[in-house]
Image 1 (tube, rainbow, N blue to C red):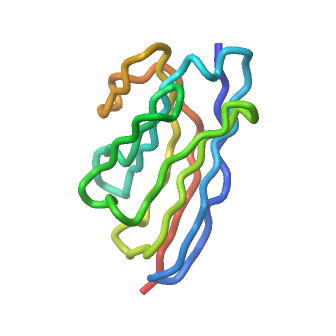
Image 2: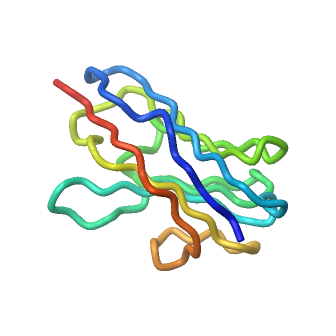
Length: 124
């Protein structure tokens, strides 16, 4: 029902910034809550940030609060993750995910649709 494609990953020095984008196809994008997750080598996939379907409510993992900002542009079917003050421990594959309805999950099991991921590498 919704297809997700991430972009914007790459290599950046510690203290730098990146902006990830997740482009969605489908006519009902504004009916989905959206989340960002990441997975580092040898570790479980972990929650990063989430946003409600209208964009009024946002949620962040403690490790990124104050540095990352999630936003969405429903007219463009796109969700963003602005990442500032990047640290080497932010290195991971970043995924976006979608959940239909008013609920905004903070666990990966709460989402129905997933993108393919984009690599973020932060050098020290």
